[in-house]
Image (cartoon, rainbow, N blue to C red):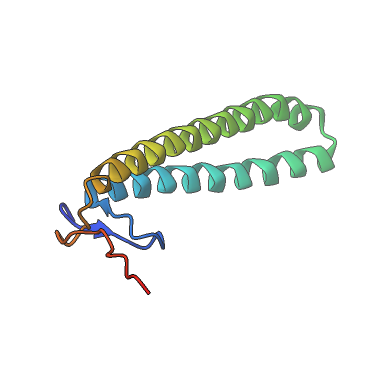
Length: 113
């Protein structure tokens, strides 16, 4: 995948394969945490409905784990946002030369008339 580009952003911006791999890895991590959170929430709800004291005490730890997972998701999204911004900045700096990604001049001629 190295050296691949992604131009699906609609504005002609291209991201290299390494950047896309980083995004993909982060999104997989986020999805795994969200899947784990769904299981935690189900267990918390079952424990709450049971009203069994031991289960209610267990919920304290489960809720802490859920909160920590939410913090991890927020951190991952913050990192993704920063990485995306950096890649867009680097991409726009590359475009400022007047060259398009295909190596041809990107400047338009003005027509009189």
